[in-house]
Image (tube, rainbow, N blue to C red; front, side):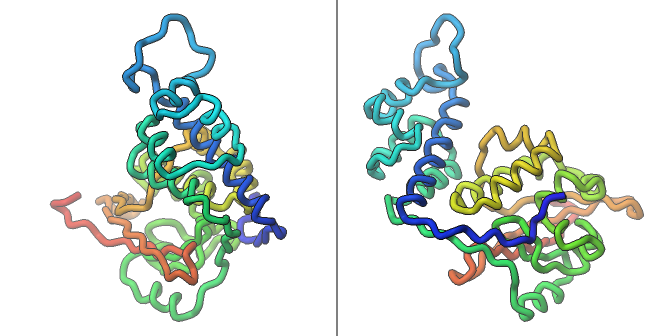
Length: 284
């Protein structure tokens, strides 16, 4: 069983250590985006013979981005080299990043600002619990680890009965891939699974200092081959309004909700308030 509520406070890390972690994360991300892009997609002539690795070669990305092959190789290798926004933007265009991927790339680059070890919130105040409890439809608060910190009775009824589950089982990602009851209720499970993993990847890359994230991913990959396969894709997406469909055993009709995710204040940037709003029948 994965220990998901234990707080793994990072040991003191110097700015040098944190920047080195960020450089490696940036390099891994660039490599994953290069591997999925074929020469023909990038407007390059198709090469004869089989390539040793999938996707573009490093030197091809360098040509498309207008940088030297050595410089781009250093970036992929996670070396701490100076890189301007103009260069990182050019590399993003060469890799044909989506808007969400482009935003994620800029976040990893971060303008060469000193890296800060971001904290994770594990408790919320009672007023926020009261707000969630007063909502008529499913609503809950999670942190960037996908740990469930507050939820109402509608969540128990439609999403999953978290009240009856142990605290260490109250993680939305873990439930999505390992709990058969949640999977049975969620009609568009495949769509939500892919979207959820892509969102979780953005958190994973943001908390390069926190050993909780790689341990969680490793443990969940062992529990779920479907999660492991999605994780290997290295997709990233931003939170947006997402439609879900639930079918309960005692109800004939499926119920559709739009999930709206709201961020907290700057004091708790890792918290998210998720509110389900019912979809009118003609819209579903």
